[in-house]
Length: 77
Image 1 (cartoon, rainbow, N blue to C red):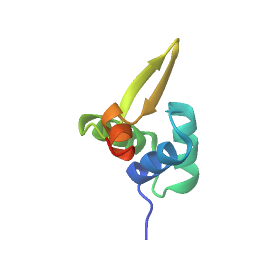
Image 2 (cartoon, rainbow, N blue to C red):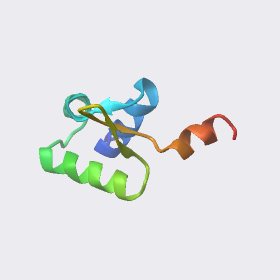
Image 3 (tube, helix red, strand yellow):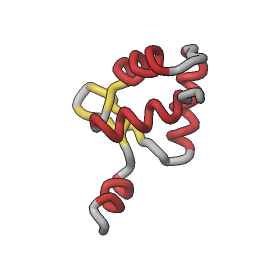
Image 4 (tube, helix red, strand yellow):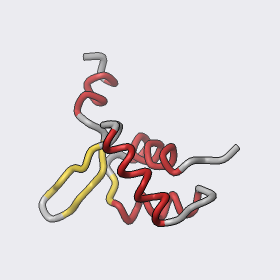
């Protein structure tokens, strides 16, 4: 069974919290086959367009995270 880039991104954010692009890229490169930069970029674009993940700006860094609604749902609110 293949581990998709989309699942890798979601799983990493689920287990470790907000992630920067370099960390997500490295994890997906190690875990997913096939992996290309284009497939990774497409996965990020698709997950953002579906509002599965969002881009979170913190100071000068850019992180990917779940939207607030995800955390509210996890808390049962």
